[in-house]
Image (cartoon, rainbow, N blue to C red):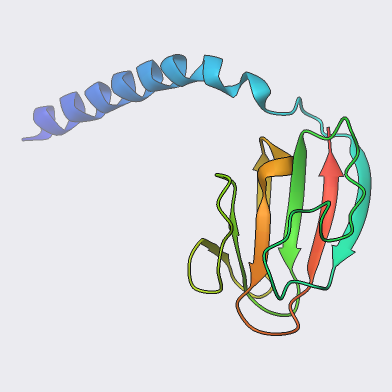
Length: 124
């Protein structure tokens, strides 16, 4: 049985290394490290779904990633072109965070409970 466990671990390691090689090209849109800070904004009007720009943020043209904190209440977000609702979308808990690298313009947020705030940091 001990030999089987070792073989399973080496098979798993080989599988994971193949998966990393297979997905590496898809990560070319990720920001280079270290990240360079480009700015900050806060959104306080989240009663309906808003994009970052629609929420009052000036999104830097060269931003490739954002770090978002749901400060006072939980929020939901989507990035597929469909607006989230208070009950549908990916949740970010109160005081929870999201690091997002992708199409920043497609992100939309909405509060789950009144008086939510989003703190947003932009990076390239």
